[in-house]
Amino acid sequence: MDGQERWGMTAGGVGLAPGVGSAQASQLQVQCAMALQQLHGWLQTVVPRSPQLAEAVPLTAQAVRLYRAGQFEACLAQIQTVVAQIGRLGQQNRPSP
Image (cartoon, rainbow, N blue to C red; front, side, top):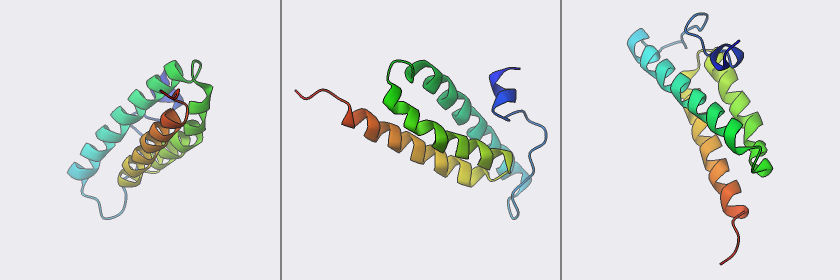
């Protein structure tokens, strides 16, 4: 099983959110999938060295759930929340000059 299958990001099996046109949903779906794949890879690499960043994992899992539900706009918003939290966590753990 590859990372895409494990995170539920294969192209099939995702419905469209109500009121979202298929072209728009397709573009949002691609953006979400790419962002989730990059975030997943980054977290796999960074969390072992910076365990405090593991706090971003539950929020990332929520973004995956939104993706699976076809709620691509909400997924992108959740990804932005994750990135902001990672920034805050990184700032909190920086050594003082």
